[in-house]
Image 1 (cartoon, rainbow, N blue to C red):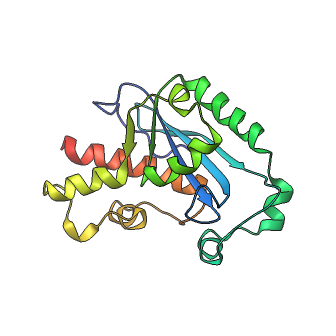
Image 2: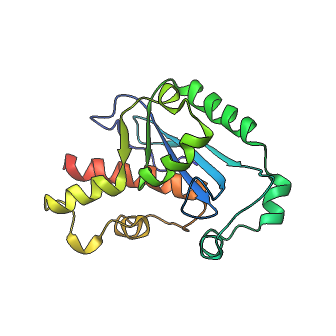
Length: 190
């Protein structure tokens, strides 16, 4: 899943792990975390190590709107999914291979609401610093660096930077978020 080779990103001195989730609704206390997508952005700007994890639940309390957005078939999902403990261990192992680095995402606050329930030790798995492309884009719009018409939705940022993107698959969303972050870094370096 390597994007396009880039020269070292000037200010990026260590990898960042980008994450995205697909869920059965908006309430982490009620709705299930269904999938997690993880990729690693290297200081050279490469998107590497794609990992897509599916969580199995005994019961799926989902909202129809959420399922229409994520397109997940619950029967097929359940058959391919792993128990939460195994998924949590897989996320920890993924992070351990890179070291204790920052976690990134788009509108990361939403994903963290679900991830904290799966990983109560989240702050020991990842550094406390976070990268959020939605907030970064909003700042750059306010600073006049990014055109206001672009907006902050991930699909609009991907389109602005000419990135191919099919929304609402956790792995695809994590990968395009890492690429958008790379483009944001390039934009301010000009």
